[in-house]
Image (cartoon, rainbow, N blue to C red; front, side):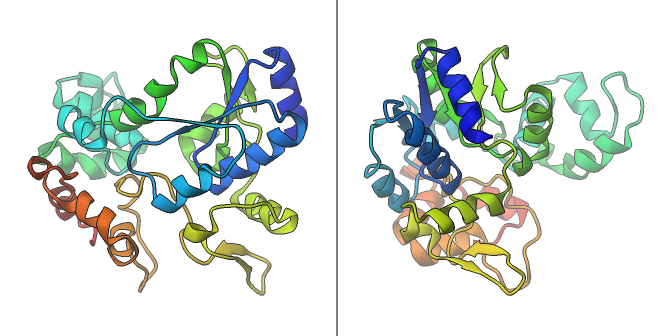
Length: 294
């Protein structure tokens, strides 16, 4: 089914497509499927400067890869717009609430835009209302500036394949159910040929096909007695200093992203914790406020 979606997308755009390659396991599997059919499709890797060094090294071994760098650095984004915290939705709503948007303020008050009570907003946003008084800026612009904007010029000519799974978040599930794998008529057309896959599907594909992946950061793929697959090191990669998703509860005895970063990547950890005024990312006060261990 994924191969069919790839063919449909490639043919619809007369081959003027590209693959967004992050070096993570999802995009690695997608790129393998695409190149099994169309080796001419270029892979575009956006090096945000917050990629794990193992990821950068791995991506540079892949065929037909073009590496691009955003105009802004992560530190510049944090200084100008603010930090992404909790989730993209919460960060975006906090940004607008702090700038006086009534709809955003009402969400944190557990209300719909018209002011009527909403249990959904009360549970999703109301419990995070305290971040409106945080002494650091908050926004969801980080991904836009570091990942979306650098690809804008390319997408004037080529339409993207994106290795996202609909199951990764509620927002992605809703979007996928609305458009399916190939969003031809969306404001920003894109193909998600792995949209219906699960994380287990991705790991099983790698294990059964033996394709190369960033093993130096993910470790081995192992299977427990119930047939559940997992990597022995990182489960997800992405930007190593990103606070998104780090407020979720962890199993007792497990490390936070930042505790693991300190142990395995001390140079990147130091950069993440150093104050913005000293050339770092200034994450310490953010993590302290959100009670994220580091």
